[in-house]
Length: 295
Image (tube, rainbow, N blue to C red; front, side):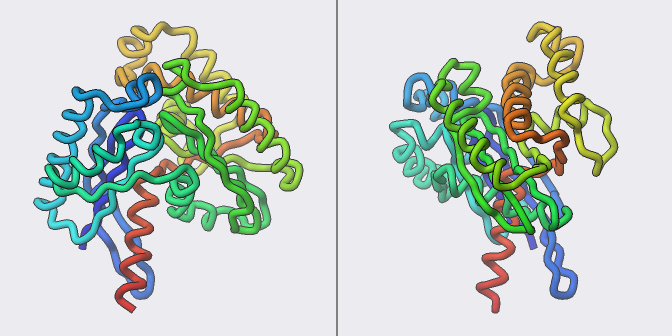
């Protein structure tokens, strides 16, 4: 049995096809195929408040290709979600209708809170110590989702319009930064000694570059050193010398700035990087949905 997840983000569009594994009463999944297309819809949405004709065509072609792959892989169920870029685009609803008609993909635009809920549906917190307090930080192209876990339960969660593509486009605001700082200040008082959990393509890449062992956290000090190291290279050098993909080489700098700011304000000294994201959460939700329906 296979499920598929589509995540239409502000920087990239992803398709994950996963094999569902049933072992007794436990159901898990194994990643079969992951495809990432760097469309960067946020450049249009955050500056012009609509997705251009050119990028709309590219998105439609991508969705058509994803639908063909879903069919070829004999996927039994899928879910497609679009986040902040499509939320803010005036023609977002039009594109949803077009994708349904032309590509045969049922696409939903999810609100910030729903996005946060999907991301932590992968139940990472269950593998961590229940007695400790955790700050879940997910940094995307258009938004940053923060959630606090204590005793294995969500105690507070909020989405903020601060993201890597948005920062590159100078479309982030002082108000948004003040809002995130104030939220952290209020919530970190209630839940002291927070440990970070970081998700998103950039923190995954940073963890890989850090050469830390899997399962070990990344320290704030190490992350700050990596930021200074990366910042010492020009954009071109980050591509040619460090070997970063073009669509990663620019966003990785603002991503570092967001993680460092959030960790500093929350007093987080270490961050775990489980290397999961929106698509993993979607697959987990599909597993839970289908389990419920089969009862």
